[in-house]
Image 1: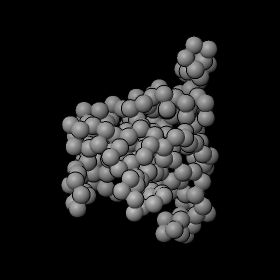
Image 2: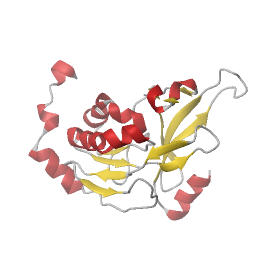
Image 3: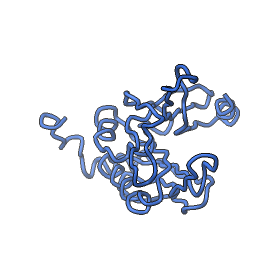
Image 4: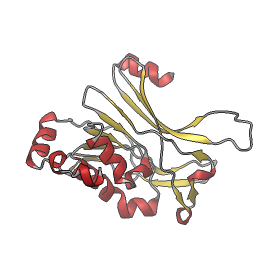
Length: 212
């Protein structure tokens, strides 16, 4: 409710995620949470709720998300003033089929990927994955990212950071470093979307009859 009020007061849209959503009997030893991403519009109303589909089970990083989290089941997109939003979370970025469905089946133009990448996976793959999703989908990618040490009362995580925005041609147009947090402003250009898609009309060339 606090963020809904903030959106309403400032007349802005908010992308909030991922965070732990509790459901069912929280006292049950079998209880698990959902990793959730919510879109709040400028009237303070929740316009989309996405529960993370792909859980990050990677013991080499010390993280096995399925121990405490249930996977979501639904692909989520919603309209906004800057274009149609594809709503995802973090590890989803490694599954291009989800993003191609958001682009080619749901008509998305901006892909939202709030993340907390581990240090080894972030160093190796963070920028590569964000740019790949932007290029293959011809969409803007907006990837907020948790940075530095956090969760001091839990598993004392350290996340890669480097929040970034990538344009439909794959160019990084805004980026933080691995320790900083804050706000950067970018323009979502309808013309850039149109020009990119006209130069290379993937939607027309895609073989829906063979692979969907």
